Length: 170
Image (cartoon, rainbow, N blue to C red; front, side, top):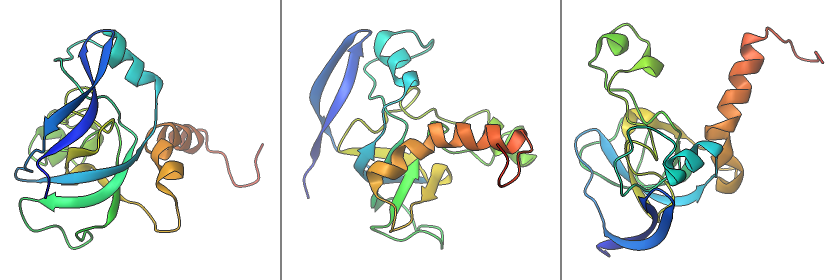
């Protein structure tokens, strides 16, 4: 098993470079994903250009990630298996501990990493992700087609859902 991987990181605002990084070990509640595809989103520009507040550089952007489960520190939940295709979006997984999580409002988690902003994202060969931030990707959906669904697709879905549109509406 190799112990380094390539990543495209923002070293400082406006400076993007390809680097070789040490392959990280997943911690409790985390998995290491072998990245197959990562979409490009306007929010990534905020990280790259230094427009997003609170970024600690260097940072690997990318939050529309699809890949395969490569390594885990602990047993996986029943719905996951080694080598399975998964995706992770901008909200990188809830903590299950904070008040919002205890209320079932996982999207409002107060300790949730932001993929590609507060933790490294998918402009890399590998990345760490919280298990609670993963979604299963169906085998009949290509990684390239699935990746943008993890951000732009969710935004579109939520807008349609809140509009009360029904099937066939225009």
